[in-house]
Amino acid sequence: MMKLVLDPYYEELGFLVAQRGGFPVINVEYKEFPDGEMYLRIVDSVENEDIAIVMSGYPYQDRAILRAELYVGTLKDLGARNVYLIFSYLPYARQDKRFLSGECITAKEIIKHMIYAGADEVITLDVHSEDVYKVFGSKFKNLKSKTLWINYARKYGDDIFFVSPDKGRENVIKEIAQEVGAPYISFYKERDLKTGKIVKIVPEDERKLIELAEHKKVAFLFDDIISTGGTASRVVKALRKFFRKKVITAFTHGLFLRGSVRKLLDAKTDIIVATNTVRNIFAFVDASEVFVRYLRSKS
Image 1 (cartoon, helix red, strand yellow):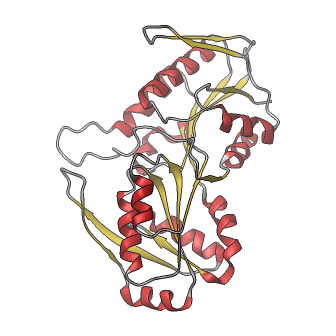
Image 2 (spheres, rainbow, N blue to C red):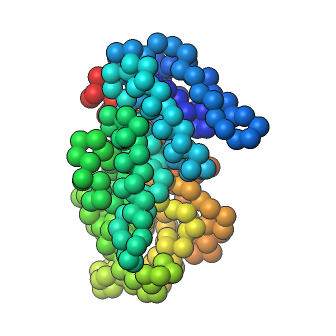
Image 3 (tube, rainbow, N blue to C red):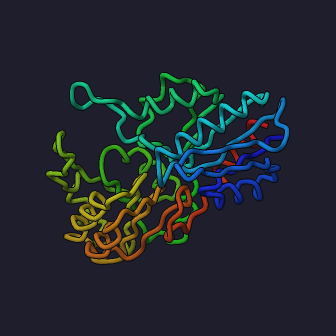
């Protein structure tokens, strides 16, 4: 049976995975010395065992990456058969391509380190872009939150339509909308390559949006991540030019950096919801079932 190591910096999600999956938890001793260096000890025997490490990559991303390497390397050194590293939120994933000459593609470099440390698989949820990870083959697995949002949205029945904040989210929004039996609309944005600032955001089909605004009562905007809230709030503001009823903004990874909630409030967002891949007060959707389902498939 699969056994779990729970990272002490975010044990809540690991607890839910353990409880829902019925997975035993390995005893771990972890502490930090006054100078910040880490101490780690795997107390229980892991020889010839399949072990999944459950952790989030936020906050303190650099420390999380180092802890992950220490967990993986130690478990393999102690004889674990397979080590599955679950980063519920994968840090450094947003830089997934080289926009300017000489840029580090951090998304790829992080996974290289984890595999070199001994991870048999690195597993995450709704990574920003899957393409960069294809080079790792079966060593990398991106799970999808789609079923979570389908179940959440179904309670609104025929009143709902879905909103994609950009072309990058359009495919998953389309899939969710089709499962729910609802229409969707996409927005289009352009960024300055050097500053990352959004310079334009408009609906891709204004006529369709006007029709949806007339007949629907709930707009459901979904994105994989919210950090500063700039993108989501600007899309909501653009949406509000046509739609005056209920707006829900939903995110897989709710980082909610300072000022992000205020931006959504100023844009006249009615409901904010996120999963619990990172610790946040809007985590009304439980992602643990996605990880449980996958780990059971490996047992």
